[in-house]
Image (cartoon, rainbow, N blue to C red):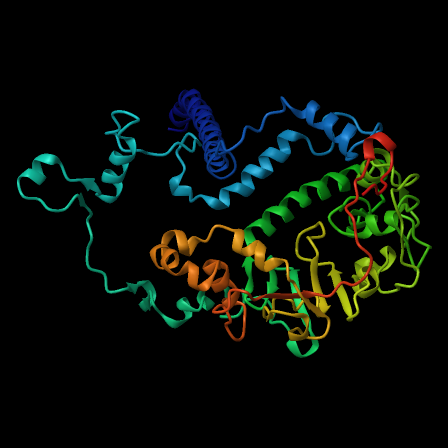
Length: 497
């Protein structure tokens, strides 16, 4: 029996070995298939999320891009080699990835294209718009046959009943939608700061860290807007430059830490640091942007490389050796380049001295650096205000017929009235034409359009008197003449007016 079993085992051994070999091959094949499947899925995900074909991530333009940044911008120098730390192809790939936030995954074709569907009934370019309107909105022009048959309408529009109800139990005419607070957070979020009539202060313009900006010329002339998308795109663009420079610094010395301060001082030309240093005689003369080095204070590690300041402001504009002018700010300790990153910059201009006005007038301005989660410094917050009668000229318009009717610091502009009357009057031409022609001999020439526009800016309307004009600021100083800058022929500017 034992011999029989032994012979049976021996006879089965080749079969078992073959089976083991087959199982091993099958396991290897399954692993290979699994790896292939994983790679395929990963590639599909990458295709869907990072390769939608918005731009072509090719290295074809890497050399040209590198040479442009090196020769014209200063983002690279002789110690860098093409394609550089951050080649064109990588920037394009990142831009493509960033841009995908504007499209839903379900709206992107499987081949990563951005082709979109149009009605298949566009027979010709002439009727394309009509066809598109019909196919999308159901709008169509009534045919002549239908009109002959008694159809009175000239256009059929699929108008349906809607009670104003919206999703999430909302109403289209809800109070927070009417005042805008549902869109921007509060009803006053996009209104310029109110003028301070008691102290004659007019906030003229401003920009906040969140992308809100405003501008106004008077209490009834102005507006505001918020553009978080533009801020996001600007931050993204500057982050690409920041990453490029960090890479350059590490290649020069792996121990060096490229900081926001380095970027702020040497690359961020959209902040006033380099301009304050180059164009002013500062209160603190210990900081010179052209002599400033990139050095880590905690370990004294230093790197040297080209910057936007060295290339554009120094080499291209030659502001280091031959600035066209220098502003003396030795007594303005509230605004100088060295401490801008920490304290910002605030200062005022005595307009009374500049324009020799009898009344007090100042221009007050300030800028403070914003910081966010982005690697690079964002655009700063800034503001400008006018203090005195100059900024309050249109808050409100002050009508007059002679100087004695104007407040202190104003004079009656006797020339403006005639100029306004010579402007073609919209109301006369379009609305009151017959009436104005019939009564022109009685009331004399008057521009009704501008009269009503002035009424809107006044506390008490006075447009009934066509001889009235407005009060303007009393500038009693020298007769200012226009200056012509001969930059190209003389190499510097001079007044010749």
